[in-house]
Length: 239
Image 1 (cartoon, rainbow, N blue to C red):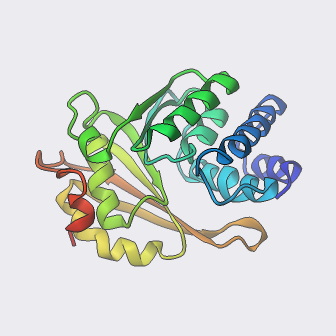
Image 2 (cartoon, rainbow, N blue to C red; image 1 turned 45 degrees about the horizontal axis):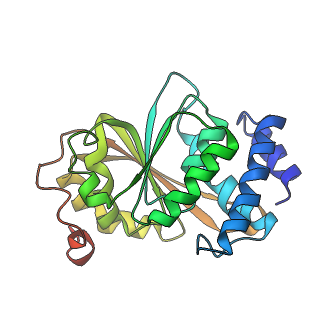
């Protein structure tokens, strides 16, 4: 997907892209390519692939969740190179973004991106999701929590739902196996206080594959024992 097609696709879908925001995406790409030579951020580095499989893919959340109205807080768990939260922040500057990632080198990259792109209202934390979710400062405090390509749904729910405030939404961004993972993760979602609102399936442009955006509303407080100690959700998922 060329940058020009990226811009056209977003405008067609009423996602507010401007020339200034396009310049931010261009700089983001440059930083991603530069830093990827030093630390492993992503296997996808070719320009047109980044625009399609990272930038556009990240912004599909904005097709199904209204980030335009009001000021919302969003926590991105295991953000890696900043997906989906940095593209969402570029498009929806009113979002207050919190990124938590377990690798300090990636946090260093994201600090550079935030500074170079002139983004404000972005908080970066080097931490495990399990310990972050038990921190009283952050637990049950976000309107939205999102994660993309981090773990299977049964594990991901335990990492993300404790951070969602009651009546907030967990946005799980999944590839083709999303529906299968959702079935496997339904027990975990219920235990953790969530209720599945919708599983939205769609195809990325240019035959880039099937995607699922699964919206899970937080209906009850998560029991205090979750998330469990680092590594436990992965070793013993709630299935």
